[in-house]
Image: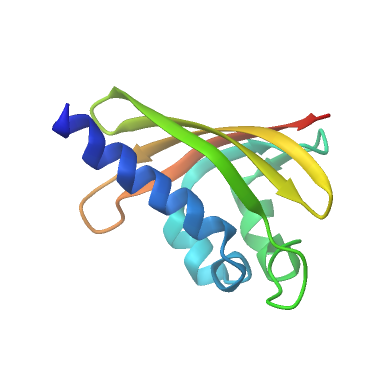
Length: 124
């Protein structure tokens, strides 16, 4: 059981860092936290590639300390295989709710677990 908690905890910490306004607006942090092969199916219905996500980070909603921030809740995770963690949670951002799912995979000890796939689905 402890072997699962460490990777899941590390994946949750990485996910929460991506919601921090300081991190969210930094391309350098994005490069560190997103897998180079990552894709996202956003709550908007739009598909985002790694290159698009990195390019859009500085102006990304939630990337301003004085603007709205993403509020996650009920975040849970499960270790799917060595180096692979699946997270699910809900967010509230600027009056909108979304259910979210992220797959994170481990690269090496320096980079930890990076977001490989993310999907957001609007919730009512």
